[in-house]
Image (cartoon, rainbow, N blue to C red; front, side, top):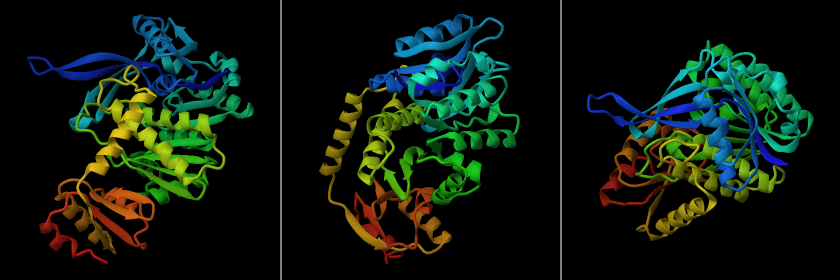
Length: 401
């Protein structure tokens, strides 16, 4: 039996690795696609995975098939098509490691997967079915994806969904939102990025956005990734914050969200979805955030996934470093208006080192306006400054409770 089966795009990412002498970008070819990245990470963690999708019967497609097998992913569900080419994506790395995507897919082979080519055997043999929205952009892949989700649901499998929204691949916003809401409505486990919540619901506040999602979904576990600000997990009436593992060696964020998603699915495979407590959710987010941090220090994604030993080493070293830090200063503060929050973030951003806001068990980067707005500001807040300087006192006094 497979632990996770994923359906979606399989493509070649051309990752920008530098510039030539004349200033033109230099690219390196990396096999990937969001579902394959998730499966590759799960395979590194020791789980059995299988992929369903289509590639062109060309040199790129054959390379993809070979690569996913080398990554420990079953290619039993991979179909080759001689009529269309393998989808290509160019990934321009921006300052700070973020990315800009350009796709060559009109149509690409991944879009040509038909419903009759979906392996019912793989769907029946898996424990979790994972998919994203990119296979919902066009027919016949859209119908094939919905068939796979229906097969998984009928067989009582857990369903995982990641919108993985890429604006350039959609005809319009309405079509994209319709597809994402479909996936949200089908899933038990949702991974969604902070900017996707704002795009989908129009809400700046994460809590309000998640509540809107819950109205249209039966998802039992909703995880929100916040980039460099960490992550949030919503489970029943619980909300838990996961601190990030920031690195000055970050060079490429490609695959970070997929790695995080795989960390979550690995936890669910071990613990299930019933009766999770806050400690469980904290452990899940810690592992997923650490794994995502590691992959950002490497080029590409599918071939760059860490194993559990690397993840545990990063977590252990981070905790050791936190204990060795100089004593912190903590102050009670109150933020009573939007303008005051904006002023506060500006003041905190001029301080060196980590500056955190604590609200109960939630810990938020005090330099992040979106993170602060995710808190209930009517509750008492504690401001924690880790590299204290006496000159900060005059600034802090403006906000003290």
